[in-house]
Picture 1 (tube, helix red, strand yellow):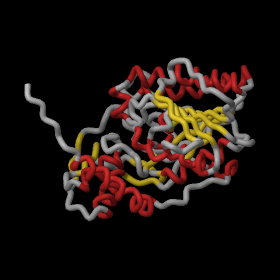
Picture 2 (tube, rainbow, N blue to C red; picture 1 turned 120 degrees about the vertical axis):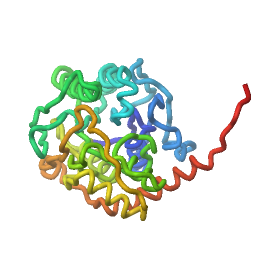
Picture 3 (cartoon, one colour; picture 1 turned 90 degrees about the vertical axis):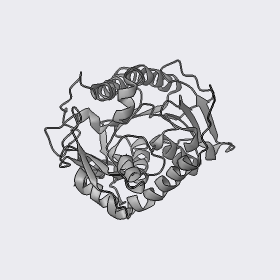
Picture 4 (cartoon, one colour; picture 1 turned 90 degrees about the horizontal axis):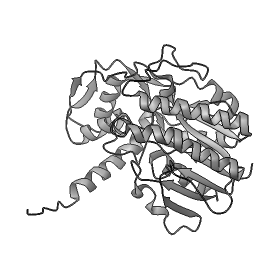
Length: 325
């Protein structure tokens, strides 16, 4: 497949902005659409002035029109961290349903290949470990995390319905925990929380006893896998993530060590429906895409921590404006 021009919804977000860079580096024209609810202009401002880049501030739950031909649509628009989708539950459900519907409609009209950014959260608090794509999940549909879990599960169902009914050429990636530069400081997930707390000398907040496990994939590995999936013939969902599993408490200690911090640990109750384990089975990605992650956690943290140091310094240097009443 020849890809000359792509639309990336949510392209001002953490993963979306890295994908934008990747496609531009590979001589594609990129249209980014983002309502900036959780995305940031700072993630893409280095691209302004590039003749192969366009940005539209737009809510994809509304009608989408993109002039000229589009070869591929990558639908990454959605709040993606628990702190975000619990603050914006209705918006999360709308972008997973209405937004996916609008993006698929554009793909159908343009004859474009469509790639849905799904998530490991479709597996909920899994009873099967590690999680293969064949596992149907263990999701609480009315829990606080259900707005995100069910939005993505619906988006997958709608994507395959468009493929089966209308012949739209679709791909689905189930993304596991991903990290790297451009994550928001207040993202709310373990990695940005831990790094920010360690750099500020604050106790690292560990929920529960810290025995729950996660695996962390560097964003450079993830976007390579997405590129491979988009250009493949694989229609079924594919897990992309790092299978190297680590208990959260061990991860916290690793962050303290790598930041040379004097921080300690503090424990808080485990959030509702928080998964006890999370580890991708990447057998399909290996066999069908010839993909597996290359960046170790230590290497990835070494390249990520300086970004957080710089971002924290920028926040601290921002002047405060006082207004007299």
